[in-house]
Length: 294
Image (cartoon, rainbow, N blue to C red; front, side, top):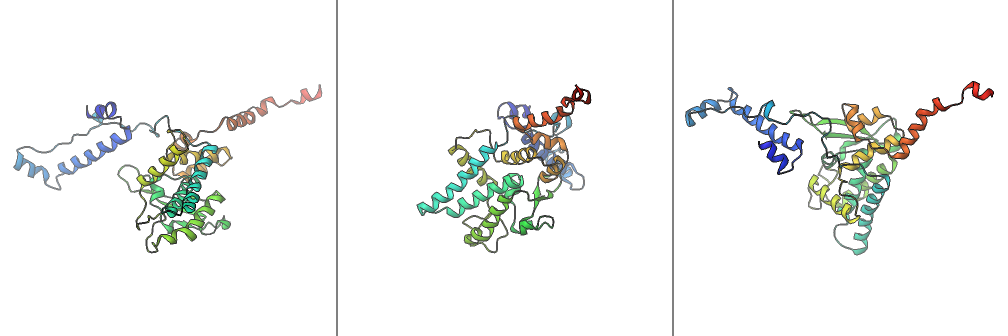
């Protein structure tokens, strides 16, 4: 009944409700575990003992690889360009106005480029450290920014965050983060802080702050509200797919165990679909030897 109320009245996502249920399940399992003695304590104090309350028949099962809103979609190429250009414009405006916030605006503009340029989740980006970038012997032209070690990838239930290395593929994104690290971040005065994205108060930026800045920029541009921070990650997969990048490579880049998850992220354009259609039909439509002899 609680799950129905949370779904119908509070309109929470199934994944959120399942997270709540998981916490309750872990807590009740802790209480009834004989190794800790809580059952005996409760029996003595209350005349009864704790029991498990979360079971397969009264909790939401995880049946689908992807449970996001069906309204969610990636940025189009034109939309992501407008968004990143607008983020850059906020830096220029702050400089011209000679007001506070120049460093923060520059940081956020670079952060959004990194989210799109490496296909990151919001939390993954927030937890990046300076040392997470490294060299790639196969791409020496990227220097120390050839790979990105994502240490806080999305975890499976009951497991620690999954790590993965993401290879750099976009020259302009590498140039942007290199400029930020070398010329802008030092001005925050946080030399001893490990975080890539630091605040003017000397802390690490939080995912909620990333979301707030994103929403402000999106709404200022009057872009659709279906676009969220995660839409940039979807766009990374979609646009590289359209550019002909191998699906298996993209699967590794974004940290998906199954190709089906990567496929859900892909929303290729009509032009791409038509190009693939022509390629698929080409052998059947090609003139035969008999046709050429006529």
